[in-house]
Amino acid sequence: MSRPVILATLLAALSLSAPVLAASGHSHDESGPAAGGLTLDHGRKWQTDAPLRQGMAAIGGDLRAALGPVHDKRYSPREFEALAASIQGHIDTIAQQCKLPEAVDAQLHIVLADLISATDVMKGKGGDRAGGVVSALKALDRYQAHFDHPGWKPVGH
Image (cartoon, rainbow, N blue to C red):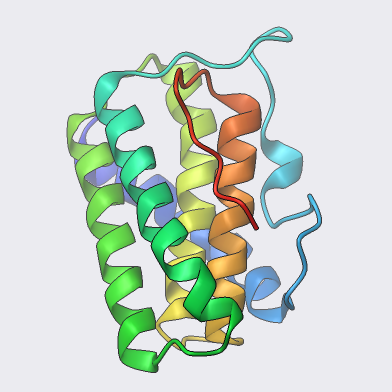
């Protein structure tokens, strides 16, 4: 799928999920803006490829490093913006390099849209910036539950 098509799909999903994310508080429940649309592949996790696994692992690493200071309220607006930019960079790389079948790609777009919405909140575009980190963690939890990623290291929260 081409980058413009991926970005258009992500932006459409983002426009639907952003108001919900902006209203979310600091909670670690399983609900989320796109949680209802994500499904398994006939009861199994969706396949992944190396670019997806590398990008998602990098996003997990970014969040893992930020989690302590965010929880301790020691994260500055500048740090939230840098975290959001890093996550967006990983999303862009995934979009450019990922070569997944259409059905998998459609499911992945749900997770990526949630991550993009989360980065917007981290940038101060609605809601508490720390809530954007929580939303990104929820998106990674859904990724782990729906995608086959050998060696995935959950981000503890």
